Image (tube, rainbow, N blue to C red; front, side):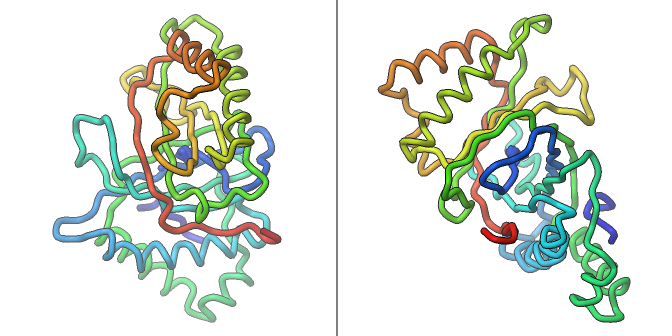
Length: 259
């Protein structure tokens, strides 16, 4: 199957972010950043992305991928707001993408797989070409028992860098994970994930880590009343600098079998 790479979170992003109740260590997220072509809107992109969802759902059903989702940018601290408009994320169990089998693709498109995929890639490029791709290693994650993008449609991604490049941020990440677990139990977050940038990784990017938080609403970002959560936030500030914060809305997503 020809993937979007020929044309990034989460998620998060962050994705950063695997669409599962529990995510095994060392999974990978491809963040594929799209910029709408002149005159095009998200509504124009949705039919293309719905078809990608179907194609990737076939791979998820076979266990080749963990998930795929589309996140539309709502807010960003980026001074260049037109850099991109939305992100599609492919979450994989390894640092590579394995598509659905030939048999599964034949169920979708019959004997026209190559023609239909070529047309899908063509429409993709004409509607919202890819402007950037990043590969992230998902180093830690927690998800609530009833987590689903449809239940927590907002996801906040903090792109981070260590204030001291030689420092070990392990303690801060552990503290943040505990705070995330507390907020998940309070049903303020649907999940929490921390990822490390793998490719392309360079100092000019300004960040090397990402923390993704699917949440019930932006009010969760206000100063937490629980002193333990406030302490975790202070440790985050001491250890990491937030280079960029972006707020997304889950728009389309695959579902894992049995969920």
